[in-house]
Length: 637
Image (cartoon, rainbow, N blue to C red; front, side, top):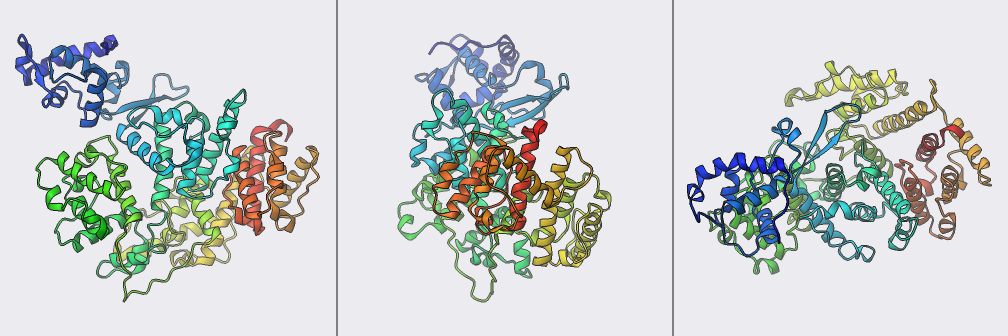
């Protein structure tokens, strides 16, 4: 391969760093001076171009596959190749705090701010890890045979997500049946003159469906994915993957997690823990069973020596697999962290679980800017989901209460707004008042007196601090016009299911209607009758025979009115005959909601809500379609 052409600024950088190189390797300054392949990483590091083992192997395979020794010119070439992945010299100084030569920097210029830039650090590790998971989860999907596998070591991932199909399928792998298969535009539809339009439809469907399962898509649109913006794409993929990996790491799905209780704790304390915290406890539980003193407190510094992973894999592996694996002692025999990590991944491969991480992600998990901690967490979550290796606790009674459809919908709505922490249990996670106050601030910015709100809690005072926060919830609820007569601060603090659920629905309703009020330019709240009146006028204007009497009208169960309304909002984009030919009502409702999201509707309701004619959730569907109509048809709405 011929020597690549580099920019003048990169070559100048190389010249500036040659002195540092020669100080560490003085023989390079003499005739015939070279460094060996084993010294190559150190040499590049001395020049300020730190590379991982896998990245260096890729560079050598591309540029110098037969070389075993490297002179000064060869080092300059390799240095420049690494530096070409970094930002322009003009903005280099402003990025020093975020800079890591092993990462790509993606910069999105802020409109109207002159030379100001928003800086996003994009790790190659994330791209490779997510590509590996996509390949594993979707490799057998016949609709994706023309796109998979994805090469995670290049920017191919961003390009192959451009038609939206992989994203739609990834969402369904995380939360099955979110998107109806017949609603997706597949290969046959992605050809010809309308290909660009159909791709855009898939992307809109993917983004709105991701929001419906709890992904925060603020400032994420179809065009961001189409334009291959790495920071946005990787952020969205991670949210989808995380939801899929973590959704079952709960006490309700695994009663045996009660074994992770610490002395003095209750099941309620365990419910307060995030999935990440539960995973750490699970690892330490397995390490204790394995008879080792090793313990972990994070998925970064504490796993870099591979000791925890070596014992964990041996402990959770089924007996028939264990005989094929190397023992922890064999894995840890080397002092080299990379070799230890290689042994861990070799064992993980025997369990079909060597995904998300490569050896460098384990051995150098704390390297700044690489986001390797989340990749290691995903690696462990996948292990838990496939090999929990726990037994039910006999002396602890775990009451399992299945999450209702409404609870699931409201939880997803909250998470889509980016509340922190991520809501996993609608009741235990709301008891301290912080998330409810955050939501109220979304409904009416400035309504929450944040300076008075307690954000960190002292264990022996937390119930009083929660109570104080919940008093502000009641106070703010009244200010934004929510019906608060039948609920008190104690009800929220104690996690009263019925009253908390009622409050959350009123907040979701108020949020939706506040968006509608902003779009219509009005100053008063819009009620159900006005939404119904709008829907009927829209249907009539489009020549549709269907009409809406109320949101509890039994005729709404087949979903066809929703589909007709979607077609009226965006004509000739919805094939109503497909839905009309479906005999299964739930299947039809899933198709109809998918199509409604495809045209731009940000709908949280589930197919079951349509079939059961849940009047509250049906109202939100119509309100979201009304919002969409005002967004795209405002002059005629």
